[in-house]
Image (tube, rainbow, N blue to C red; front, top):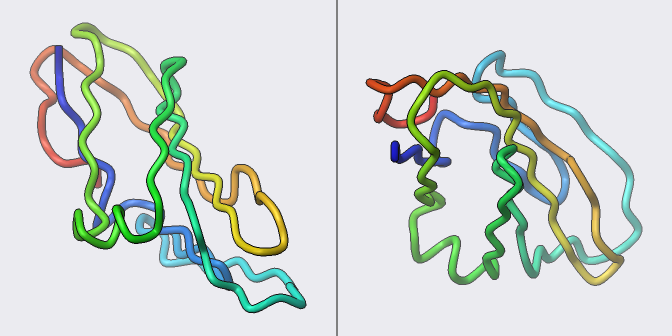
Length: 107
């Protein structure tokens, strides 16, 4: 098993924008609410998901681990977030490749 970490340098979802850590691009969308993110769901691209409250994610310094099976595989990580206006799906994504010797931070 190989561990990957989703955190700094990865796509970071916030309520008002999504910053793509790889390209520096910013995507915006309009929202009439207070924009207070309550929770995040990370879809790891291998069929598993992790859910975090905004408080939990902040306490983890926005870096969360995930272990992938050994062997060459490509996955796309996506992030959903929820606020008082509802759930916003796949606001950010990052394509990664996992190899047997690739156990470093996802960047």
